[in-house]
Image 1 (tube, helix red, strand yellow):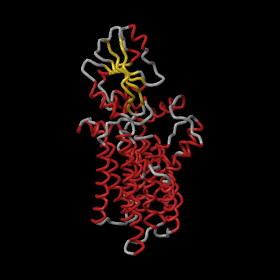
Image 2 (tube, helix red, strand yellow):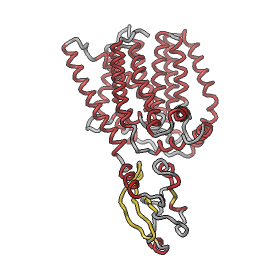
Image 3 (cartoon, rainbow, N blue to C red):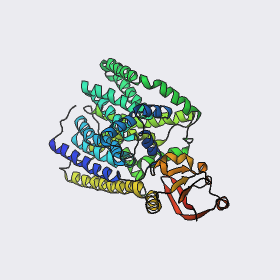
Image 4 (cartoon, helix red, strand yellow):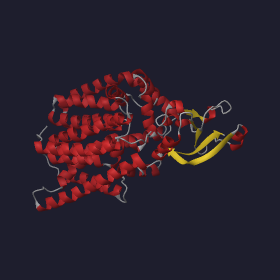
Length: 472
């Protein structure tokens, strides 16, 4: 590494990290659970062998779930603890990633990196989700940084970190695995054309990584077989591809996606235009930081066309740390020094834009976690009406594991499995999802039941009508 980070630089990074941590903490008290998160909650109720088996029959590798399980042994399995499992890698990236970028490039680049990472619109959503994306992002970010560090400075610590983070990414998410392969591929090309002396160590890193992944290869092969015959992802069309940028960079204001695209383009042009022989290695690294997510997406699209749809754009979220690196280096090049008059003006405008993005990010993330669906209204309804002698019946069977995150399993029953003739409940609260088996009022009347409509409610993406079914 080239630069030492001053106490002032570390202090600024600490302030940025604490600010974003406060936002993530505020979002972690949410009652909402999304479908994928419900799968995580259900899986974490098992022991470690059960988790490994559960991921093996699903379509993801197990590392995130194992990390979460180990932390629940120490801190318990409350909702906020599970949210913090996803926040931890964000904090690591913002502070230690900022320091790493500062040492490879400049202190200002490190600061811009940490701010940008937190402000990229899609990152805020996945920073607190009970999923593997923030961990995969952390592994890919540090793998890329350590690969660049090793190529430039050939330090043993960066070589080891590159291997460990590459293995971590591969065991977190399969498209993070693809991104890790691309990083190794770009390092190989750089070694072949410019630094052949590191080729042997590159080969050592690849072999060690393959050996570490060997225990999971048979599972991966089995999962690929199951995915090729049946998977839930829809076909990728031109309309799908057009939606990639709004998903990653869209905010709740018109034109926000375009603004981020302009920032990305300006960053690329700045790296190319203001590069020189002294910075050519870090400049090339930053351009490759853009190519990794691009080729990850291309890999997913091609695989989806050749086999069957297996890719959605959120599988590129683990690469967003690399986008932040590129933007940090580019903006550091294009923004004048603060000591200059125009530098102060430019920094003021950039700071104003960052503050605006920060406020919009908070607004959007708060809406998504707290007000986007009807979970809180549903919670309030049952807190008021649900009694000890009652039961909740649902007709949307695929959401059974989601409902179990909101209500005790003993309070839930599938409507189609409920024997109304033998049922002895004070009230049956029926969650009636449209297009699924309904409660026929004539059939209920024959059995002595009455039905009372209570209103429209819902959890997650599942809207339903609630009926009170009871005997007089």
